[in-house]
Length: 370
Image (tube, rainbow, N blue to C red; front, side):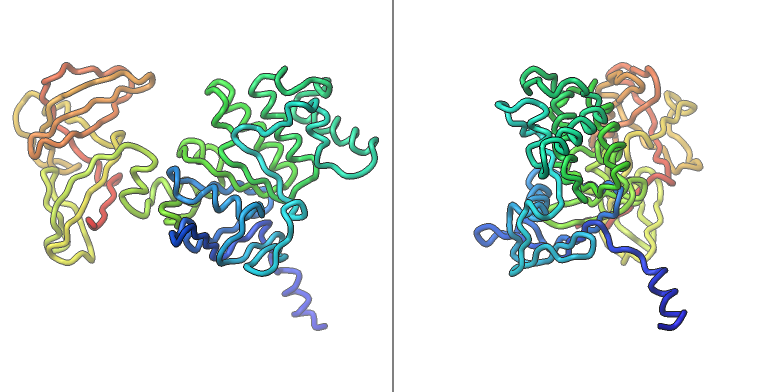
């Protein structure tokens, strides 16, 4: 074998811990998962994010082996585990599962729950159970029953049980939604730390954008059975594929206009629309935190054109203090639409107060209107 060939083999990247290619699932002629492909690397957390009914959990069930795909293939560490003919049974896929309801056996003690999927002699099982309970902070709880534990403690037991067989991949279907907000952040962070230490590839399903942003290294945004955008949380948030992708992560304000000469004329001034044909209906999408209030102009009449475009007038409809910021809703003079703006700290103008609003050009998203 030549030195060049040896070097090529040395430099060749290892296969993903999990790879799904072109998965399709149909029910009664309706496609619920439509050619979904994704990869998860060792120690990486990938999140399937989307609204209820978009196909997230069905994708997870196909990977777990509890449901068969109609098309597509699934690989673990480069080895085929399932296509439409060949199928490795779920218990031999080296895949762990965590669910929203914890799925603990109520008639088994904590130690017995953790040991349930383990093979080997009693002493080896006991050693592994003790190691995992210590790792999740539940040493000494092995003789308790699940109903004697808090929700957070039950979640830790579920994690220990899922980790016991040393899975290569962990599939998590909204596992933290049953916890109250005070516990959730801490439990999530502890769980991910343990999974990364184990070098486990994690595929997490959630419909909560905040959870995905907090936990994921990579987000696959799903809609109507398809992945419409995939990438790092920062890129998904700051370079969304379309208006719906923006709106999934936050409230949005929308301004409409027509492209003319690569420009869109709006009540907030002109916006560049390169490559758009004349007459194309356009939408300028802006998040509430990027609306600026022209305090120098407010109450003094029409605003001139300034660096952030032209200010447009709205009338306050409602203002609410949200803790670290205030949310103010305006009815805009130009078409009667409602605009939302968030302002740091306490800002509670009275209903009926006229104010001038501007749009930050560097924070806008322009999309053709469908």
